[in-house]
Length: 258
Image (tube, helix red, strand yellow):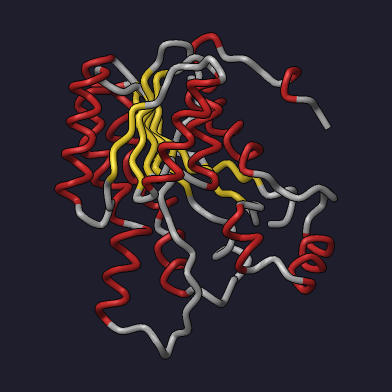
């Protein structure tokens, strides 16, 4: 495996402004860190106060640009759009948007009420569209940009423990392909990144048991466990000028599971 020092540097990302939803923990924190390490100016929103504050301190102490962040529950669309406006006022227009926020809470078909359905979509589906709506005017002013929507391979492998999550995540490819055509003339690229089973602290704590370990060994082509940083590196590529002609696509980072 490659060491961190041997990984790619993207000169086109230095000084760029990047907005990340759900950037305080897990995959989101890895994305925020990876962009900051490239010299980008990152803004993010999250509901995790302590973790987000610690992440900003860690990045700043490492000598990278300190991220801007705001406490925001993305279920509140007005608050999300206000956060984008505040970040834009503080930093300028954003050339990259990473729609990362999501929660794969387990539930059964029988337990889902209309209220639960609406709440799950308010976390896992709706914020991506409205973040795009808020960010795109600035990308047009800049003359282009990259929108990276986070999907999942879980629904593609017929994961059965989170039907609302599966429905929401299956719609991400529709969002990507549905907007790529209309935004393309403005040189705004729209792509999906679909991770496999990523070993975030939450996943390890809640769901990685003996059965899960066996499933990873059985289904992945590669033997190593998937890390948040592995997924973040795909986001770096798609945000960079190296991916200038990549749009309307799904890029899987799942060690060959799906």
